[in-house]
Amino acid sequence: MLPETSQTPPTDLRGLSRDQLSALVARLGEKPFRARQLFAWLHGRGARSLDEMTDLSRALRERLASETHLTTLAIDETQLSNDGTRKFRFRTEDSHFVEAVFLPEDDRRTLCVSTQVGCPMGCAFCRTARSGLTRNLTTSEILAQVYEVNRAIAALGVEGKRPLTNLVFMGMGEPFLNFDNLLAALALLQDDAGLNFSRRHITVSTSGIVPMIERFGALTENKLAVSLNASSDAQREALMPVNRRYPLAELLAACRRFPLRQGRRITFEYVLLDEINDSMDDARRVARLLRGIEAKVNLIPYNESPGLPFRSVPIERAERFRDLLLGQGLVAVIRKNRGRDILAACGQLAAKGSEGLSSTSSVVEDDLD
Ligand code: SAH
Ligand code: SF4
Image (cartoon, rainbow, N blue to C red; front, side, top):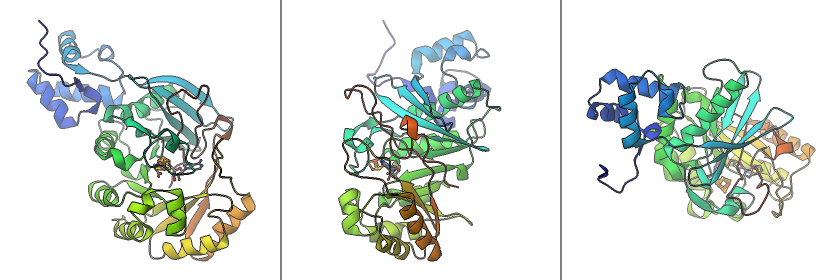
């Protein structure tokens, strides 16, 4: 008889907090330092399997193998852009695809991470929206994107134990709809026995789920990015259904209350859409909306997507928009368009090959410092 006592899936070791891992190791009758060893394998070295953990006894590894699980997130395909951007497509154990994008730039090596398979938010311009939501990623799957890419780029010769320096949660999905798994992943990524990311080097982007902005501010010290994308409620409602539930006044009030550390700003992403939200009047309204907020506006050139009616704007118009914001005392930059040749630039990792593939679309940004 198998000692199986319940129908719940086995515990995923990678998703356990430090305390949960210690409790598991204690329950197995092992000394506390075994939990530290296990943690270092899982989160410091990004181990894929118990077999790698050669300094743990075979007996312990066998017990762990019979009672727990270590989810595999296999790199299914990678694509390299001529600007160095590298797109990784992963296959989940249940055969969905998610993507993460590596954006190297000088000393900064940023990974754009996904939090859901698909996205339920329905933004009109976004490729990911078209597939709807398939499911949340687990904590373990969120982490595995980081650990797998870290290994891959280490193998490519980028020096150091922690080749990635920055993370942005701007891939597929709405991070604040997968809040518990996101927070668990952040804690593990920031653990000094793990990859020890600094809080200010991790940014989470939301379409504007107001109550979660407050919780995020209360529970973390990470950076916040908000997808504004419009200068009035009418315009934003047409582009982002979330605005019906949380209109601009509520969204910006939550941003005003957001606890910012000294010198930090909230990033507002603004995808420039030709003839839709790109006029000088729009720029003036954006400046008015953001008055009194420590804000940085990232103007994002739109990545056109087959089947979607939106067009990107000429660079001169983006520059005029930026200059108007600068003239109003705001910090504003035009985001560089990365990985365009491999469809890995901001906001679009287009589905490739058969339409039948699970969502392979995603959203990518540079880091936001
Ligand atoms: N769901 C979260 C995080 C992922 S989307 C959010 O919406 O904030 C990350 C960013 O990509 C958003 O600011 C979104 O407006 C932008 N984006 C989506 N599709 C895009 C596209 N085709 N071109 C450029 N940016 C896009
Ligand atoms: Fe989801 Fe963000 Fe795309 Fe909107 S822009 S559909 S919230 S991934």
